[in-house]
Length: 349
Image (cartoon, rainbow, N blue to C red; front, side, top):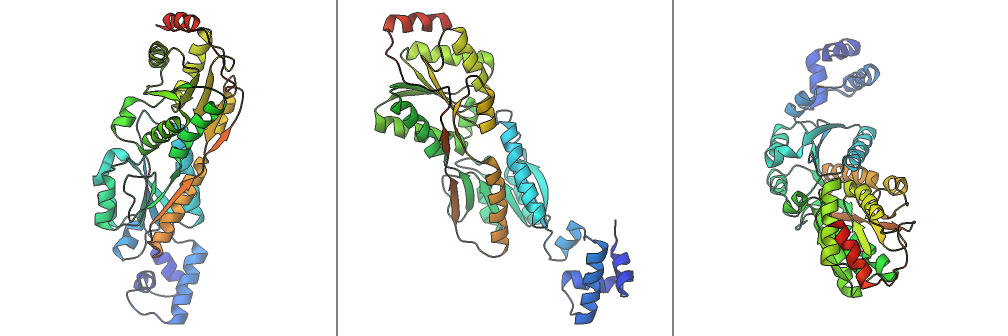
């Protein structure tokens, strides 16, 4: 690793002169500054982040707060985190990974230490307690998610309200009148995760507008929990012919259970998922799915932080439009004999 002393020797100046060039705390003549900067560039010298923070300069580090919940779909979270990291590196920044287990205290610690120039929060809740710390400390920040109150914040997220509505509209256009939403685990709704709550809002609003009967059931996503949820849905609403799934872990078990109990997809039951394209293509039948570009979330969040670091602090909320791709898992609703529906619902119990 190149040291400050080596830079000083290469530039023919004292180490303190190099320090003054880096900190800007003392005027240095143009020719001397040019020699030091040329030596820094040639040797590839990178000042220690803590030293730069103490000197009042940017650390060129962005803190990324990632979720460690067992109920999140890890591949998507990793895709977002990698995208943010790659974008940061392109702009000369490093990324410091933090966990959301640290909560508001972790954000406050990073903001006050000067270790990071800004932070990106993932897994944003509608009433996220970390937001108060952002406002208190004034650290430049971007949110991947949309809280209930976004005043003064820079946020980017998928338009989950529209995503929930797209699922309902697609099934309604196919003639389905009874639709169930298989959601995330109960803990996701208990912490008011924005992506889950907003999808449910869009689902219910669109159902009311189109005159559909709907219900929502949280699901942990295991085979056993999905079996219990499906049995409950068909016991409560035996005429259900449309399923919307917003829980990547539950998709495989649901398709398997429907197959085991004679519910042909899409001949008798249609399934629409909110999931990545590659997951939709992996299942049989291939899934009609509502998707959004996860990579764009990480990239745009990093750009929002950079904008704030440059002094552009106007409120900015960017919602990425979801896309519904029709595949083999959804089809026209068929009229079904009530006694046949009841018998099959009983077999699931």
